[in-house]
Length: 216
Ligand code: AP5
Ligand code: ZN
Image 1 (cartoon, protein in one colour):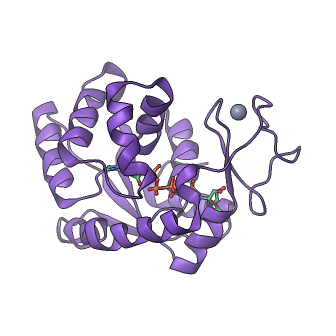
Image 2 (cartoon, helix red, strand yellow; image 1 turned 120 degrees about the vertical axis):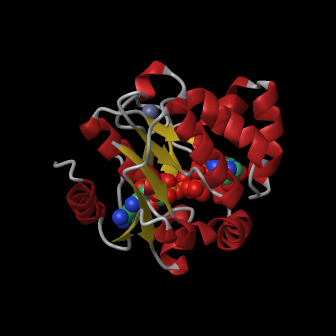
């Protein structure tokens, strides 16, 4: 299976992509996670990406596309992949088309997470992440068993630097301007499926299982 998860920041793409990728046995390719890993490791890519991420701006298209091109050429992507948070501009979507044509594969579909801005702000302000293993929680909607501690590895949970309120507003504005045009782009390509993502995590998961045909 080859799917794209598209939608505003905080829509639940990462939460659902982790679940679906595991069920389908394909890699979850999340450009945000890849950039955060590069920042942690202090690589040149990380140093470059950090400036944009902290400001709530997109990392330049050529950098992002180069990263994805390399990742998709790896052997574990041959049987499929789930793109989470990529593409985010029309230029990235066009670049992806060329990469996939070069690999001789096509997309199964694009899943658009439809959710109002007020829900996004509520989800991002309560999000906590594990700096050690990358797991994501929410203080109210998906709390860890022990407050402030990762269920998987026990590390202390933190807030993502770009989840501060001013940066969230900036990310939403950037989404509207640069990423939302992709909804029509993929609708016109006949690939778009919409999921009403302002419902509880398990209900959204069941709906995605139905749309993608990858059962629970
Ligand atoms: P990225 O990491 O991709 O951030 P994002 O798209 O803003 O998405 P989020 O991770 O914020 O949200 P999500 O939809 O995955 O929601 P989640 O599942 O965590 O990108 C970060 C930055 O990297 C960008 O700003 C940019 O600088 C750069 N970047 C990345 N990709 C790029 C690209 N292609 N081009 C250029 N730059 C790029 O859920 C949110 C919270 O809600 C969690 O706490 C979760 O527990 C909770 N939750 C989830 N689902 C539900 C539900 N159904 N009900 C209640 N709570 C829920
Ligand atoms: Zn952890």
